[in-house]
Amino acid sequence: MAEPTYTIHDSPEVVERIETDLATIVDRVREADPHLRSLILTGGFARGEGTVVDGAPQNDYDLVGIRGLGSPQRPYEDVRRELEDEIGLHIDLARVPSWRLRWVPASIFWYETRHRGRCLWGEDLLGRIPIEDREDLAPSEGLRLLVNRAAGLLLVTRANDDHAHRIQAAKGLLAALDAHLFALGAFPPSQTERWDRFRSLRADDAVPAVLDRHTDWLRWALGFKVDPEGVDARDGLEAWRAAARAILDAVPVSLDHAGYDSLEDYETSDGLIDHLHFFRHAGAIPQAPRLMRHPTGRVRTATLRLLEASQDGLVRHEDARECLGSIAEVDGQPLKLLDDLRDATLQ
Image (tube, rainbow, N blue to C red; front, side, top):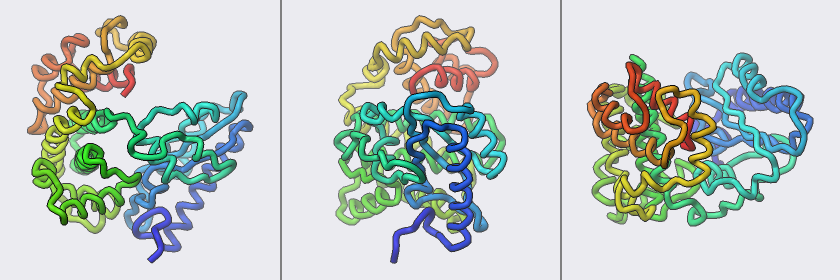
């Protein structure tokens, strides 16, 4: 059986819809940027893991425009918004100068992009990305992934939306799986490949108990991501709580893999670039000082601590004040503050 092109349920109609969308995106970006060298599809649809409901693509298209010198004729953000209105899906459209490809962060995103990204137009420059293998990834990538998904869980509590809770729960559960597999050295560049590796490890009794106890929820999360019509509709809050437990269970494993003795050790791990970035962007947060030691590490660890304090799915003001109060004054909107702090730091 051939590998799926964009989803696990490709059909001629689904492929035609997706390729029509992608052709529209290519045309609009080329028109806006005469210095475009390559347009890369990344994310779920590039890996054959895109989501389809009722025969239509869901969630988003993730793209990277690799460009030469010179300014685009129109801002990428304007093009992105217009494409969202035209296509009806969220679009992530990043712009990266071609010279930077050899110097991109050693992140999971660039690892997956190098090995599973697709060149939709122009030069195939993916081979310039220097992350050839899992060993090339930063050891702290598992932690960074957990922090970002912990933030997703916390921020979605602002919405009274069961489906939104399920979406963030599935992402959080799969992040916990990824963090464990990364620490085990079993980390191929797509979610379905990682699930296959997990199943093989379970068959060999090589899965730690701290991960194995989440298997039922992990199976649901993968199904929800790649085949949402084929899984049972679980309660959003129940899924949220399962994801919170799985993320928190994965934190000690990821700390150890990254070489940190504790969250306090991780908190002080950021450097000069983090401080400069925060100074530049924290002006939009009046209750936070722009000069702060270890802003990125402090926001990351505060995120994990706030999730630990909110495992029932309720984010309480007193818990937010305890976790975030040393970073900024916590007002009546603690989750907006968390969101703003994340925007001002390198997450």
